[in-house]
Image 1 (cartoon, rainbow, N blue to C red):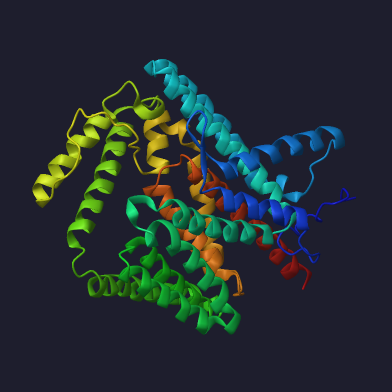
Image 2 (cartoon, rainbow, N blue to C red):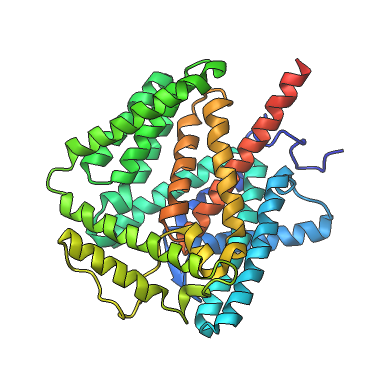
Length: 415
């Protein structure tokens, strides 16, 4: 028998009952408060504090009832993520003691990994209550981003890129599909043009990819694998064409951004190659990884003829290398990146399932954008602060798709 209050096995994504108000409200609150931070060991998102409170309540329920509250916590992929995170934390501990990392950086590094694991558990529980809770988290996150930027100012003063772009893009991807897949393609392309025009290149490119995937989903599933290469070529060509048409006057800023990202990636790769098993410890506090990053950045800037970057041997301060998986590899070695390797596999599978197996519905464009954005962040964003919550949200989406896939296979077998 299924425990009271849970969803029958395999029905995580297809439950017929409406979303429970309390779980939807919590999901909305998690998303809304994530852009706001409080200073603890480091900068902690308030939304993560909400997740910590739910985690305490959830642990008490599990101890008292001696059963899992719902199928979100029973999925094999969920347990793979937890096992991988346990291995990663152990690898970080070994690396930090071996490298004699600073105590403060040890605490920050271990706390970051521990909080990420707890976030994954609670988000899995929330999407297990009802899959629409993932959408509530996205809606809340968009509202929080907008309110934070309008009330307190946006990073670098760019209110579009660091405040309004993603919320309005997700809103368009929610609203346009109501009119059908063709409208969804048009909505995604429109937001792609807007984001390129506002100099948000990465989000503009992802919007074009969402439009291409949506168009591909209109093709019968048996033919998608054959049409996909042509669609990918057209989408990539479209990204480059639109980018060239909308970047007048932004070349220097784009060059500076590219130099910074490339230097971060190169420094992290070189650090991993130097110590692939042990790593360099949390935040590289007792290594020359940051110095190497500054040197690569300055040399690349000199070649490109742009300036304004920090010199080598500068204090890193709040600088963090922007790559979730590469930083984990560089800090904790191959075992320190265990979680992100399993996470990357889940994102890749989720995109494959949406593109080639899943029938189109009104949430497909939003799901596609969420997975593509998570994959982008995996390689080109840090995993501190709010990004921990966003990683957990992406794992929740993968769990939803895993349950959908299982239910689909069972339906096909029954037929």
